[in-house]
Length: 617
Image (cartoon, rainbow, N blue to C red):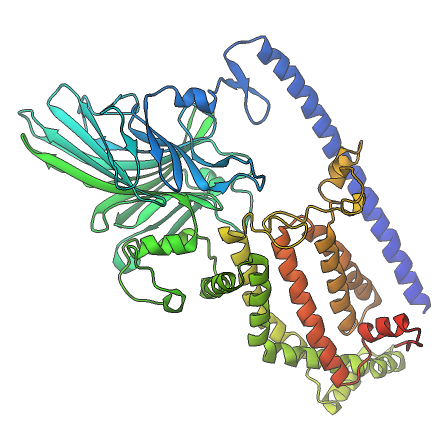
């Protein structure tokens, strides 16, 4: 008992020492750094105000002036894009697709929120666009980003209503670009060039998706791929080629791939811009990062083979551009040319029109689990019409499938907990002889027919499955802005309630509090669902056999508190899944513990509520 008290005191002192040290060595310097950066930013802003033609970059340093989006858009005459899914325009200067909004997706859940912006013109900060053209050595007069193309007045790009652009270089070459779009997210760009001169030429078609700088939040998460993506190679050697923004710039500023067909582009968590050539075409793809004017230029391009253009002849190249949201049914529809297999046929062996296009969604290393899990989740969503309920239904199904393994695990833990008093007696009896203590415990386990490993192995088998579900909920767009019940209007955001204003009962935003507002609005923002999760985790921990060492027991007792704070920053859809999974685990454990007559915290809580005496065990 004396040693236990001593260990407890040491643990409390250590915990306070860590807390004070964290405040002194981490939070304190961070706050001073933030104050210094704010002062430096004010000084820089004063300099900028006195220096026309200069603005500030993301770090608060003077940088070349960036145009506003509207100013950048106004640098070129345009053709309007108007479809059920997309709005925007095509620039006649460069004949680029560089101005797109996704009509079906809003920036926020506010009813007046603008649609999600995908592409923005060059000249604006974080420009993102698609470009197409022809390349050739020592050939003057090829159209480039400064070339202004000609279009018949009044053209509007709509489904079943393509637009035609032309350019005559005055040196015998006439270029024609026909741009078509469907009612979802696929453009088809058909380029042709006619040689009216007297000399033969050598030309190669190219297409590129380019981002000029990225926002601070891109490429920061480890579980979601953001950056260059493509399925490249030849035949059975085609594989997924990835380059995250950070590693792309650092490790592979230039990566080259030889391919026959395939596709390549740039992806964010939910959005994708991908180039899709003819699938029988030999090409070279590049993932490239360069710098211009202090801005990182992220460029994915594909270049077709060089072709001869004889006098009087015409070359034609067709390239498709996907520009939209990564919804799995839509990706599969394009993958199979409008005839996507239903969920029960996801193994369909028919030849894909766009190989592995639904791999644009980051299924991860456990794709053998994540893809089927998503298919089932999609079915539940269609049935119940609420993504939160679909998550809960899928969790129940996975629990049922894994029930035999989990049952063995919880049965073993219940038996271990039942013999815990005898184990404590053995420890006390042989406290000075660890070898004898271990021998006696093994004999006790054999007598009670308990295999200690059975408490761990089944749980290890379940980890990949439940990690895969976590992955699915993180990377798929279906949870974005999906409502649940009550105060949850967006399952992809954290729980909006917080304990520090009594979950909204007090009309006060804790983030506005002096000095500590930043912490209250971030690390200490704890809502109802994270608290429910913390309670369920405490209950599952209390139902498990205690660790052998008192210090380990206290560490395990801290886990629910630590995870409550940690998971409070996660999307509430994931917290609901974890909380519901814990509840199902608690029910299963409770039934097994009642079956073996083992004391459990639920019975103790019920007894206290009924005013009955509670056993000390």
